[in-house]
Length: 294
Image (tube, rainbow, N blue to C red):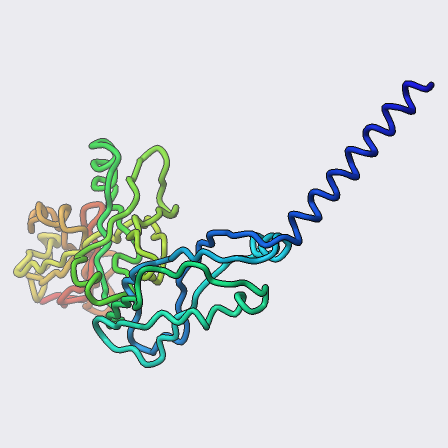
């Protein structure tokens, strides 16, 4: 029992000593090196900072341990007012009196940065439309994309950012298309520029199927078939058809059947019928009816 009491007194004394040591540290003056980021405010409309040199600086200060400890829980920033800046290079004086935390925490600056001005380069903001080009993970995926008439929608996107940066951009690409991963109707991410100053109106595009290219063709003087027992007028027709370009390329007048049937006779006037190959559509015909000559 006496041993336990002795051990308890030892830990109590150790704890009290620790509190005294911490109290002395927190109230005694100490030095610290602070890392301060440079930030901007009041950026004018139409221009944007593209470069800030330096982006941060170090400041050696003196203060009580308690005040210095409080700083570690705050992000320290030095703000530059860009209200009166212009296009190109701007040299803005470093004014340490703008660091409000120096007075707030009763700090004394022991060592200032080794520069007097901060260089801020401003560039004009602009917008630019760029074509979207698909990238493929392998040849099989590219062949699949082409054979299935797939496309990207939208196929053009708008970027907004510094003029100097956008002037060197001519297109924007997608993440690699993979036929096993992407399907018609799915979306694919764009390969965005690594620049925080550039914004884009969309970050992904949809994979869609193109509508088939429609071709049109007109055939003139196509004979109108009819029974040998009658004579019709006119005896030839003009037929206008449409279809997919590849399909229509091989169609000739021999593939078009134009005819009349006697059972359709009505007051000496017969409808002209047209029979076409699969995939070919009738758009117009002249005539639509013929007369029987007696």
